[in-house]
Image 1 (cartoon, rainbow, N blue to C red):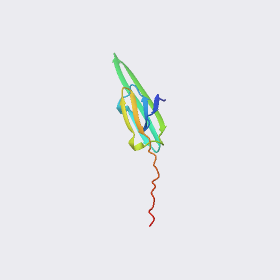
Image 2: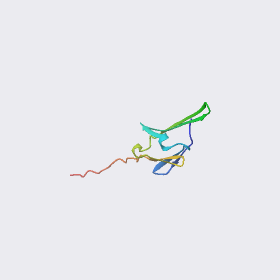
Image 3: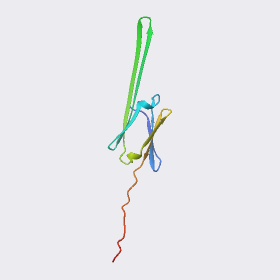
Length: 107
């Protein structure tokens, strides 16, 4: 299943914000392969309650995954931060390489 994301154009970079409330930082991973960035989050919760001779076990597993095309992004410069349930990625745009021109001196 998916989670809510916002992508804002900040001029020199894009800012991606993903809402992942209730997750710990170590439950979240961001992977980059080729020109695809994948955010995945997995939640594991085990609880056990003993009452008389009866044991109540609860297990909750939730996993979320989304991928984004980052073909126009400088992948080496992406940075990530997580606070208050929001994962923020700062994704600098690739700088256009301008062709170098020079004039030859005529001898």
